[in-house]
View 1: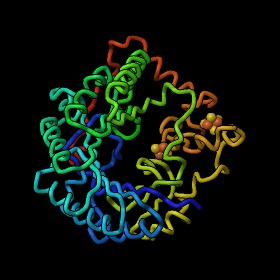
View 2: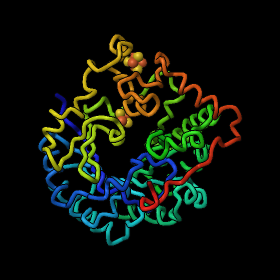
View 3: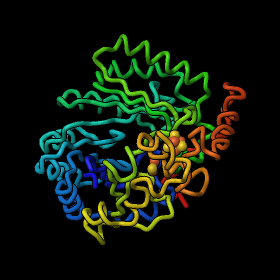
Length: 362
Ligand code: SF4
Ligand code: FES
């Protein structure tokens, strides 16, 4: 049985942004009964005892929780590496100094584009100026800064300018991650999926900029729709990472709550039991669950048959081969989506629907 390495603690799904590519659950109303500070401390302590070394605090917007500083301090006191994944809205100087004093190790700020108007449009909230200000504050206080930009059809042509913004903000690391099509992003897929020509241009620009920006680490995650093989999602189901959602649901990946599997809650069980014994975490471990196509394939220990959430999203069956795989009988579903967005790359296929405020969401 492997030990988990990282815990993604989704402290709350409350969020001031309304990103059209959000992959959080659609039914946010079901997550309002959030874990208390004491619950989180117990969960983090249990995670540490299981071997977890990295604590990623995320959401929604983790800064919407009043106890975020206390939670960070608890994690750092246990010797964990703590990482705040934030929109930066709510990162005032006072809050930032408190987080610094609590031992927070790293800050990752999301930006939606390089230009204020388009960043604000994609975020559904006027936020760019505050993000840039917060990024400068992070550097001033001596943290390493990662800038995270979710790429899609509507901003990928500005990838060079996005890297220039990262340079101006003195980011140590940039994550240029193409959208993953789950949750709200699935609804917007046809408006977000880039064309092949856009992707090729973006790859060329990233190659050139890597030469120039030697001191900056640039992570570029391509959309798997254009690959022949699926990604090794999460490094394999329940192998290295676990997520705890705001309501206490423990998950092998952040979107696994969409799968028709038995739930596992930290309100009812210890994290050790959930990791080792729960039907949810054991559902896709190993190779016994795999369809024959994957079980007899030489790549089965490399990509683990791909992503369970993607298989479920596209086929309604989480135990099928990920349709991204060119050997999958369902690959036609991916090819059809690609065909539609490549017919005319100037046309945005479908309307971009910003994520509504949770209170307006059904
Ligand atoms: Fe991966 Fe399965 Fe495709 Fe083989 S058949 S490459 S294991 S998804
Ligand atoms: Fe859930 Fe890939 S996102 S298994």
